[in-house]
Image 1 (cartoon, rainbow, N blue to C red):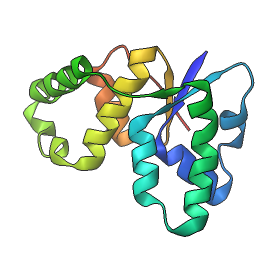
Image 2: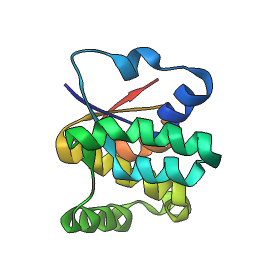
Image 3: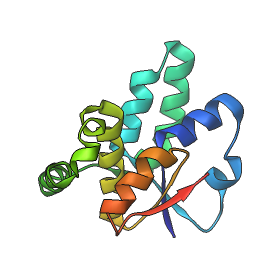
Length: 137
């Protein structure tokens, strides 16, 4: 089973050692979204943070399991926002929601289940992306 983790799962693990079971579960093939990696680097502080991120990304890089978006996927993301009902238009202007939509598309692109703590964003995204498999931790 292919799995991908949202940024908040890694942050919770780094800060509190939570989600250890899911992150280390055997029998899953883990992938890392390039968007998640960008968010982690953007929030990184100092040498300790830099070392942690190099350790985190190395196995994904070595295995060729960092997933990036294609031009076609960016077009689909644009269509997603264009089709979003007006009640969500304000939310669609927020960077964190935009990033979550991109993370969802990276997971869907490889058929991975996405693990997240963010029920608010991903309930909305999953409502309009029926192919998204999301698990809340």
